Length: 174
Image 1 (cartoon, helix red, strand yellow):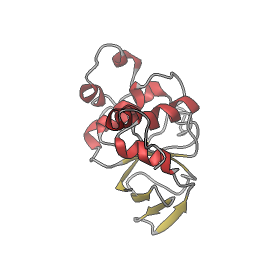
Image 2: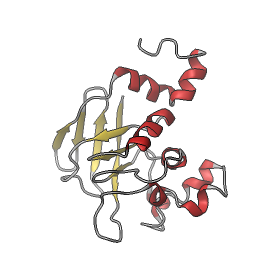
Image 3: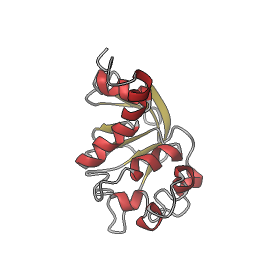
């Protein structure tokens, strides 16, 4: 499974890109007023960049520092990222519950050193072999490949879609 796209990075008001919480991903003022995820996706990251949704091309990446997805454990954050067209999030680390929710919903997350990845860079991401290629800078970053079980979940569109497709959890390790 290979993904390609452009990089989007955000800085919080304090000037860093660590601890991007779920309320930055999708503000609490929208989470409970709308159940249409395509509509919610129009508000992705708007507290950090009011026009972010209009800048996304299908397949792009969000890149951040440490503890991406901290805050509430609600599933709207990874769902909104998926519905916005972002193909994966790449960060130094992720909040534990966000990490689990993302894979359950079918959003790939990659943990690696993001210091040399800048907004606007073009990336090629090989999930199975653990290679992130920054084609803008001709640099390669290795990361721990996603286990086959998790790749199967991602390919099926997340845990629930896998369950529906296989009428249970059968064949998850094949």
